[in-house]
Each structure stands twice: as structure tokens, then as C-alpha cells.
Image 1 (cartoon, one colour):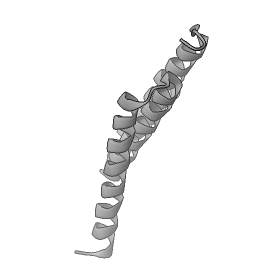
Image 2 (cartoon, rainbow, N blue to C red; image 1 turned 135 degrees about the vertical axis):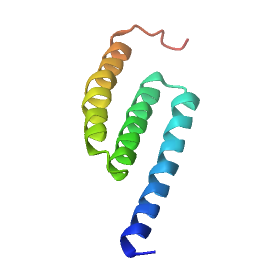
Image 3 (cartoon, helix red, strand yellow; image 1 turned 90 degrees about the vertical axis):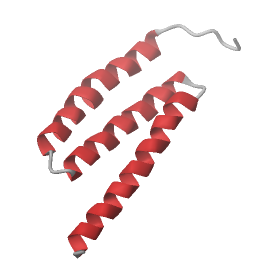
Length: 87
């Protein structure tokens, strides 16, 4: 195993752990804004895994479409909804 292959294995393992953590926190978080931000983190981690897998185009599209468009749309939708204080 060369140094480059071991770097890829370590980077993949770190990205996989971060992805599992952010995916669990999307569901487990009590605050909806925090859930949306964890979802953006999960999208970014998936993009990193795509880029690490030599699918750079798919990774860049993941960043632009999901983080740039859908993620921001979710954040705006959450921020524009009313919420009961103390409820």
C-alpha cells in the first residue's frame, strides 16, 4: 500500500464518520435550524466523498445544487416560518 492509497483510506474513513455523525444529528437535533445546518454538512461530506472517488463533476454539482440551492432554500423556509415561543 502506497502513501497515496493510505491517505485516501484515512480521508474516506474521516469523511464517513463525519457523514454518519451529521446524518444522525439531522434526525436527533431538537432545533430545526440546527437540523438544516447538519443537513448541509451531510451534503458537503457527500460531495467530499464524490471528489475523493474521482467523480469531481458530481461532487461540484452536489455542492452547487444541494448546498447552494436546496440547502439555502431550506434555511430560508425555516427562518420565514413562525414559531411559538415556549411552546
